[in-house]
Length: 494
Image (cartoon, rainbow, N blue to C red; front, side, top):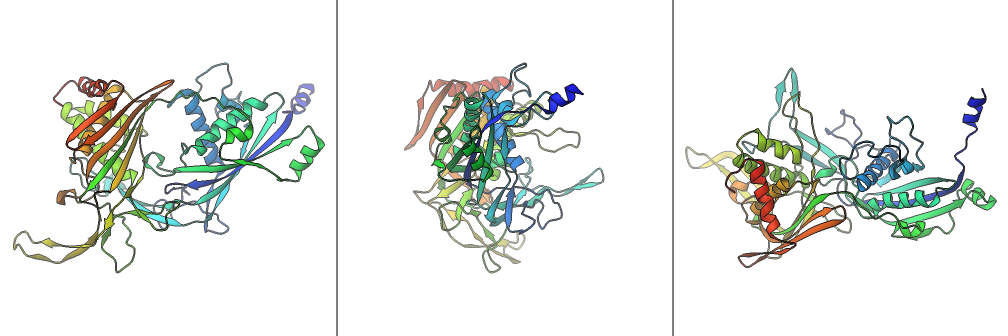
C-alpha cells in the first residue's frame, strides 16, 4: 500500500508552461483523409462534423509529423526504432516514449486539433500506368476481388489556413533542453520541411508557418499561475523565428543524407496533363491541370508531382532494364521509388524519391479542335470531334523539376542523372499525348547537391547555346556515379 500511494503522490513538478501558436498555410493541395469509403470520391476529406464546411487537422497528425521530422534530424532517414540504448533522446524528451516502450514517459508537448477556414476543395484523379504499354491500367479481378487502378481524391486547396496551438509542460531542471527541442521540431514547419496528409512524397501537403506567437507562464509565481488558469494572452512575443522567441539556440546538426536535384527547363511546344474535371459543360473536353496558389488571384498551370514521378520512374526502369535485362534492374528501381502492388503476396515499400509539385510560369492556353481519322477510309471518324486546351510555351516559359533521393547510393545517383539527361535533351516527354509532340522540356540550368552529415557536394549545370557547362566540386564524380550504376547492374553500354 505504501508503494501504491508513493507512486500516485509523485509529481512531474511542472514549473513553467509555454504556449506557442501560429497560422499554418498550405503551399500545395493537401489530402487529410477521413478513411470513409462511402463518400462521393474514393478518398474523401476529413471535415468538421458540426459544420461540414471546415477541414479538420488532428493534433495526432501534427505531432506524428513533427516527431518523425525531429527523429530524422537526430538519427537520419530510416533509423532503427531505438538507436541509442540507455539514453533518452531529444525525441523521447519532447514527445515521450514509443508506443511499444513500456519504460517511456508521457509526452511533454500537447498538440491541439485545428479547424481550417471554410474549406475550398479541388478534386483530382489518379491512374496507374502500365510500364510496358505506357497506357492506363484497367480494372482487373484477382482472387475473386476487383482491383481498380483509377481513383479520385479530394484535396484542400493551397492557401487554406489552420490555427495551430502547442502547449509545452516544463518540469524542474528541463527548461532549456525542452525549449531547444521544441524549437528544433517547430523549425520544420518554419522552413517548410514538414509535409502533412497523404501522398506527401508526391508534392501534396507542403505547408509553412511564417509567424509564431509565444506566451510563457511561470507556475512558481502566483501571477503566472493565475494568468495560465485565466488563459490571459496579453502581450505575446511574436516573430518569424521560433528559436529567438523561446530564447534558445537549437542543435543545428543534421544526420540526414539526401541527393537533391533542382532543374529549370523551358517548355518546348505544348503540354497537356488532363485535369480530369471540366470547368463547365460548355468548355473544352480536355484542359491542362490548373491549381490555386497562395498570393495568386487565379489558378495557375502546374506540373503535379504524381505525373512527374511516374515519368521519372518509368524511364529509370527502362534504363535499368537496358543495362541489366533481368530482375536486378527492377530491384534497384523499386528500392528507390517503392514497390507497387503487383502481387498479393508482395510487401509494399515507400518511395525514397520525393517529387515536388511546381508551377509552370510564362505560358499561355489555347483551345485546339481535333478529330479522329478512320484508318480505312482516311476520312473523319463519325462523332469523334473533340477539343483540348493545353498550355503552350514561350521563350520565357519556365518549369522547375525538384527531386530528392533519401539515403542515396552512388549507383542510384547515376540512375537519376541519366533520367535528368533524357529530360534535358527533350527525349523524355511529360504529360499526355507525347506521340503528337507535347510535353517536351529543354534544360536551362540545374543545381545538384549531395547533402551529408557535416558536409555537402555541389554541382551546377548550365546550357550555353548548344554546349552544356558543368561547374562544382570535382565534376568527374558525376560520370563516376553513372559508372557505378553500370557496375551495380553488371556492366553494359550507357
